[in-house]
Length: 235
Image (cartoon, rainbow, N blue to C red; front, side, top):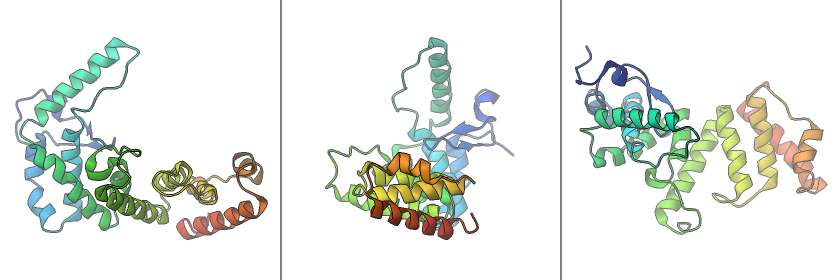
């Protein structure tokens, strides 16, 4: 049975959201209680428990992040109220626990959990937003880049359209890996196929034709077809 938190029912019974934007049902518990029910299993190899602990700890990692700008003051008040409820739910969760979420996340990602593989990329190195200009030579950033790219590729190989779209963005931006227009186009094709859509030659020419010479465009078409068949057979 759920343990009493002393908080309003609406703060504990409805789904709440972590830094990854995914909902989590705490089943009427505080975050500390929810973690305590799973931490032993997570530390002894239960990858589902590891991901659940990560999700719970990520709830608390998000509560002190700056709020976005709001056009409506009422919207801001609602979000501030939600933040207040989350602070109450996270009252007994330590900074160490919030930081250890990345180890549990990596464990879940290593097991092949596609949500975890995408979350690892979205979290940034050490669970912090990356400053691409300042941290490019930091060993932690380099290690994160290698792992995050590998996880995205593994998720993409499972026909996850979001992972494939992120890979297209990664090769387009040229921040995590060198810019590569052919790979951007190939992953864009695979991402569309994963959503049961297809990009016509005209659409691809409109998007990539000016950047890619004819030979590179043809090579990108072939790579896109290969990636699609590998990730999403039959599409």
